[in-house]
Image 1: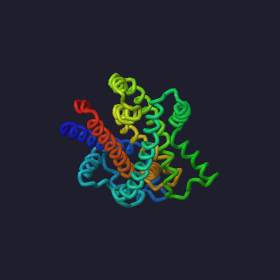
Image 2 (image 1 turned 90 degrees about the vertical axis):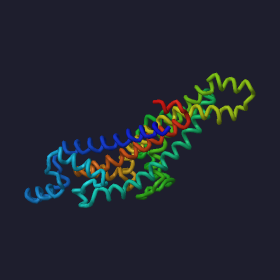
Image 3 (image 1 turned 30 degrees about the vertical axis):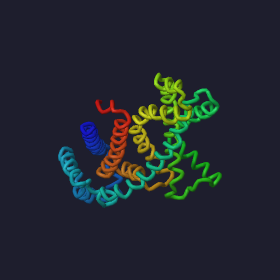
Image 4 (image 1 turned 180 degrees about the vertical axis):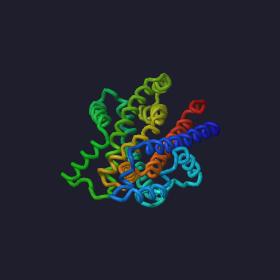
Length: 299
């Protein structure tokens, strides 16, 4: 188990470094940073500001300094906000982590139990009602869901549309993920109930409740845990648009502002933080899978 954890941890660290370097390279290849150094200032002033930000150096030198700075958590200085990128990212990362944690909790509490119920009775009335709704939500991008919830909130007043309100963006992110988890859990539960060991348990007189909620739920949880890393990645990618629509002061809005302004080091810093979220989610999902199924440790 220790060797497995160390392998997954090394892969997570490598993933974070590669993503941050790729963001820096792509940001360097983007069109001129007119958003950061425009505004009608003279060419001399713009050149001085670019030199002060370190943007006039060759790409290889920038990459070297970036990797060295990672060891000291020095992510450079934002050319737009005139502040250290580390400070800006830490201020917004907490809000994004809060939104993602609430959305993931809601998605799990809704999707997994519904999946167990629909998987236990795939031809029942509940499955016929839930399955089309889940498919529709899966096909609905988070931005469309956020706009729909925003319209609902304005029309009915059921949800707050005030800046910083958590309910609307959390639901916009949670509902598609809950639908995806419901479909995966439902299929896994159906397969688990049809397995020989559960058939034998039912023949021995194990109660249907225990058969479904203990034995089948434990077996079907393994494939579902395997996609939690993808789920967390979907949370981060979906939050970019949802945070903007819902006026949530998180990392997604900061990333979009940095991209629009061609703020190179801020873009790389936001990408680094997002990669850390995704890597942490994959790492935790792998560890949980290894605890549930010891065979995973051999992978």
